[in-house]
Length: 90
Image (cartoon, rainbow, N blue to C red; front, side):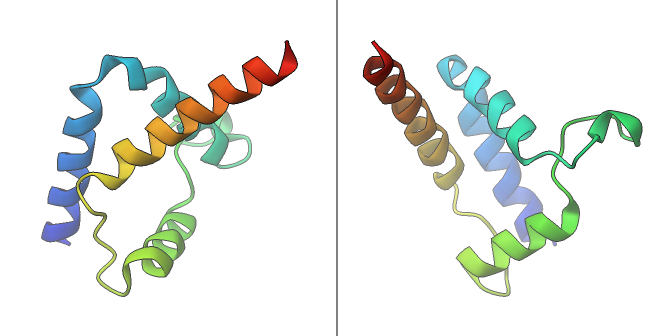
């Protein structure tokens, strides 16, 4: 668990250092949030813990610790895809 927490903190630090990804991080959180998240504590758009555990295990194995750069890479990809979709609608 300690290794996993450190991995998440490193990933979050990577996002904190890139303000242009903050909006993407919020949008990704909302997309993965539990349905009707505003009705249950902690009243934040966070994904269900069983969903997170499943996704981490399928990508990283039973250890489930995300690689330091993976979250930043994912958010950069989301940002580029959003830009492509915007250009396609013009």
